[in-house]
Length: 350
Ligand SMILES: *Cc1c(COP(=O)(O)O)cnc(C)c1O
Image (cartoon, rainbow, N blue to C red; front, side):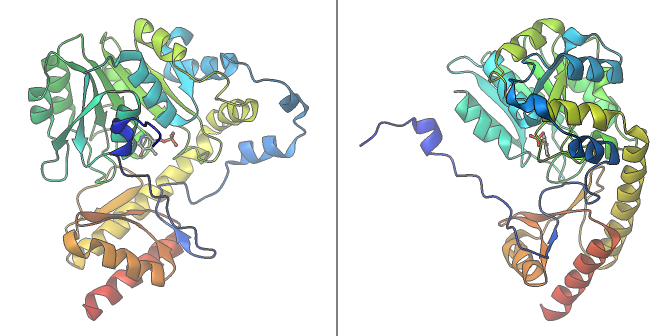
């Protein structure tokens, strides 16, 4: 028998969302509005330079991201999606026996990437569908190297209050890196949760993860980044797989950053739809937590898989977490209406 790493063989394989032609794809939190106009224009132009290797340092993209956040270029590290940047961060801090703390349930990539990096995952149960920051801080040991704080949390959508997050950061020792994953920051009401890339900028152990996959509608091209202290960023850069960020991805992300007005317009549409759908679901009796992201969480427990199957039969693809709940992405209004119709049918048939 081939000798394989037990840390990985023990992990479940990632189950991709079902791809059904014609169905509403509400399983992966993508933008429902297609490519940004600036990105579409770029992709129509000839790309002769693709026969050459990309700029390994992503110099222009890093400069554009740094300008966007008002930081220096050496405070930014990029990767092929913020999933890869999570991995880079893990490789930069994890040594054998190191513990990595995150809430659970949270982003599915955390346990997988932690295992791949050779770390030990410490899952801290959610409380009322939200991260339990006190319990997470209490889980820190001498072996803790990294804490993922997913804000808003995927898949529940809940956002952390400013006070709680500041208290948490103050309670965690400075030798432990805190990665605030703000994949959905664009959808957050600024008054409800702080922007860690601004409020925690001066902390020596806080990095902020962002992605172009959600509000920037670039999930298929794979671009993510983190902003943080120079000493940490320098190591995160070393952990990137060489050339993982292609030329087209670098250019598209720069174009997307330049299309801020359109991004804001789409975010407004999604936020308005999120509130409309959430209100309707609550009126129907679903205990949907307050979401600050582009998706909603239906805590359906044992009915989760059956509910998702019911939606699938009605041409709406959602993301079930068996025995826990179902996450549904906010799509275009007509897609959301199709989903709401299915939830009403579900209630009358069960
Ligand atoms: C979608 C998502 C990401 C971003 O993934 P990419 O690899 O950039 O596509 C990161 N964190 C969370 C919590 C997410 O939901």
